[in-house]
Amino acid sequence: MAETWNKKEREKKKQQIRKEKAEKKLERKENSKKDNNFESMLAYLDENGNLSSQPPDPRKKITINAEDIEIGVPKQAPVNPEDLIRKGIVSFFNDAKGYGFIKDLETQESVFVHINSLTESIREGNKVSFEVEMGPKGASATNVKLVN
Image 1 (cartoon, rainbow, N blue to C red):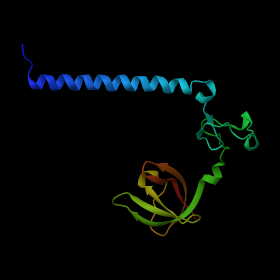
Image 2 (cartoon, helix red, strand yellow):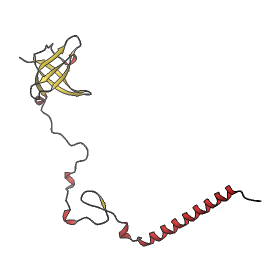
Image 3 (cartoon, rainbow, N blue to C red):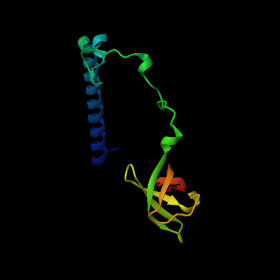
Image 4 (cartoon, rainbow, N blue to C red):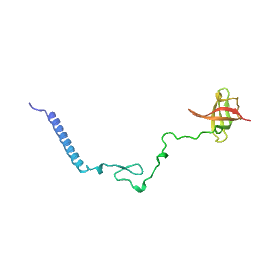
């Protein structure tokens, strides 16, 4: 039975691929014998945290106390409630819509205020005391009171 030209070409390509694989396998075996000692397999970290083939310089060693390492959120000092109370001037307030803005006298920042966080009714230009609470859209004033 005669083989077609296409079958012969496919068989030649398969033989060529097998031959290339065998050569690569032999090459890998030879290269693995050269550097198969323990020292060539070690990797070191230098002082910057990069991998290197040489051990780090002992003169650049930094000692760190285990007690100085903080894992998680650092503890905060208790906050004095009087520090949270700020003073400001109402720069804008819309009674119909129920919101406005207070300009903080210390930081000169504009803080949002909603009608639900008022203890007394306020108007533009009034001097007020308030507490700042961080909301999803930024700082907002709560517990707003008029100051004389």
